[in-house]
Image (cartoon, rainbow, N blue to C red; front, top):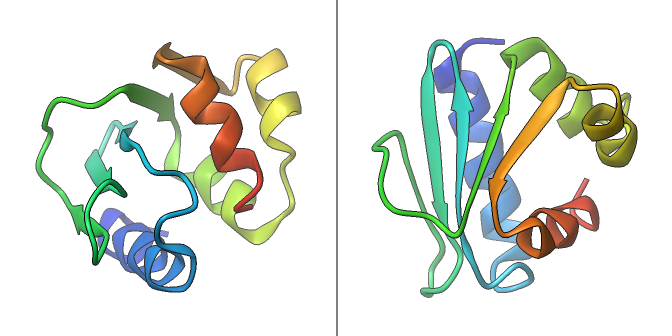
Length: 98
C-alpha cells in the first residue's frame, strides 16, 4: 500500500463513518501524512499536515494491517508499532472504526 491508496481507504472510511470520532487526527508515515478532520460535515481527508488533537505515527504496512483488521490497535500500541502524540482518548475512539 502506498500513501495514495491509504488516503483513499481513509476517505472511504470517513464517508461511511463520518461523525463517529468527532476529532482532528493526523496519521504520520515516512511517506507522508493523512489528515482527517471529522469535526466538519462532510469529513475532510487530505495529505496536508495540519494541527490535530492526536497524531498517530506508524508504518504504512502496519496501517494496512490495522485497516484490514489484521492488527489490533491496542496491541500495535503496546508493541511499539504505533506511537500516539496528543490526546490518547481520540486514538481510543479510532479503535471502534477498525
